View (cartoon, rainbow, N blue to C red):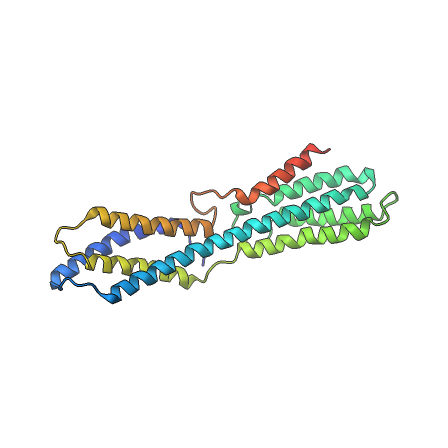
Length: 247
């Protein structure tokens, strides 16, 4: 199950309502003011769940960036080996490589379990034309031995990157996160001792939790919210620009 980051904004009003319900519940039952170790344990568990979910999203995002760098290196390596092919075949293949690099941009723009149709089509074209050029007269004697492994590495990384992009925590983790947000808000309201509510602290708590959950979902499911994560595309953009400079 995929969670839109927009879902996090429902946490804010829900927490405010539960904070108020917890406060009224205590006033209605006239419970004595005391510090409960159970409340402290629940708050600590919620904090750990929030922290580990956020750090996990950051770790997966860093893995995505690393895979983007690896893919950039693989494309650049295969691109350099085009010099082994006959001069007549190089311009067409260089254009295909530029188009292919463009097709690998904006992975964060799409929501798909597979690589894009443009990428798949360009892979077939590059493979066919590269093999034909490597065996054509005028090609370096080692062209096939050097081009084939480079192309395989360039194509294989697309699968690794797509699989990493589609890996997310189990749905139950986020359901627990939402449940603990509400439960902690209710307990926080229940622990209030003053008859007059403190809107400042209530709103501050709701904003802090909502912002953290929203940032986590934005990083975990990019391009579904308002934040735009462009760092993973930067190496590929630089590579494409360097290809365009060489004609």
